[in-house]
Amino acid sequence: MQEKYGCKGKMLYFSFVDLEKAFDRVPREVTRWALRKAGVDDWLVKAVMVMNEGAQTVVTTTEGDSKAFNVKVGLHQGSVLSPLLFVIVMEIISREQAGLRLELLYADDLILMAESGEVYVIR
Image (cartoon, rainbow, N blue to C red; front, side, top):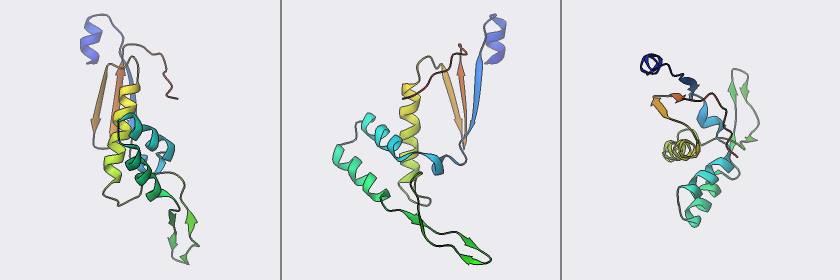
């Protein structure tokens, strides 16, 4: 792609994103927003959000387990629903990006390409 644009005298901007830890960092409100934008019925959005309420975890070390603490961000690790929720979030964010020309998603890596270096912020 870069060579094609270079031959035409055009600039192409790249952004490389590693999504390896993304499950752990998807804000719950972003999940709610994406589900609504995707046209998911409100009752189902509420059901998904209720599943995350009161989520707790512990940390296991050689010294023993920590006390349980609340997890307020991220998708449940090991849940069969989490990959689908993540794909929905990424799809909706992708649709909302104005001026984006191409995106390539491979495994846990994302490459965003655009003809402009202008930065867009999702609110």
